[in-house]
Length: 105
Image (cartoon, rainbow, N blue to C red; front, side, top):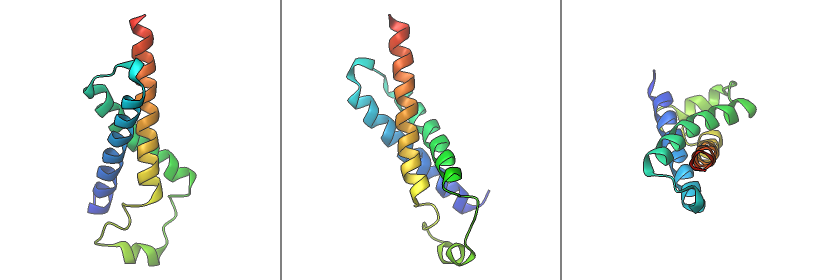
């Protein structure tokens, strides 16, 4: 695994956790603990970024852009990683909160 891939996954996990924490704070009735919010956010962040990246055509790489981003954070700090990570983390954490809330009843 190269450094650019690892940095992209770290960005996805961090933005996913941020999205999960935001949803956890917004959904007070779910009363989630920190562990479900962190795990749901991290897993959802990586999954959401992967889905958004494939929808936006993340498989094609412009050689000029790859050469310019090599050695920096340019390839990791892009829209699919940030928005997909935060959105995926928020969605999965919301689903986990709904399921846990339904199990309480």
